[in-house]
Length: 87
Figure 1: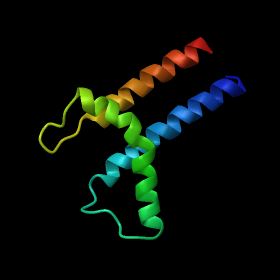
Figure 2: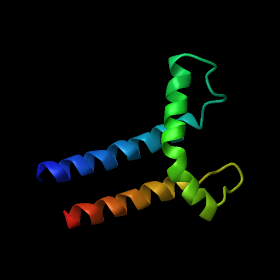
Figure 3: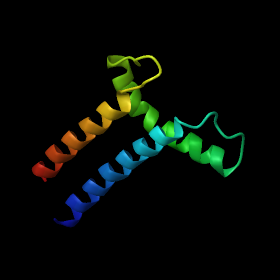
């Protein structure tokens, strides 16, 4: 892999990891009140909401289960493969 492919692959990996952290944060009973934990909470929510909302419009939550992160990760893996094949 050359440098561009490595960089693009790393960007996709980081965004997928952000979605995984967002999934883990959804199990917290309530958001932190202030400080660094609140800043991290806000960062992961704001950096992934724009992408997850696309899938939330298509796939509504099933009770208390939100399947949009799973679909989003699958789509990211597919797009990542397509982009890397084009490079």
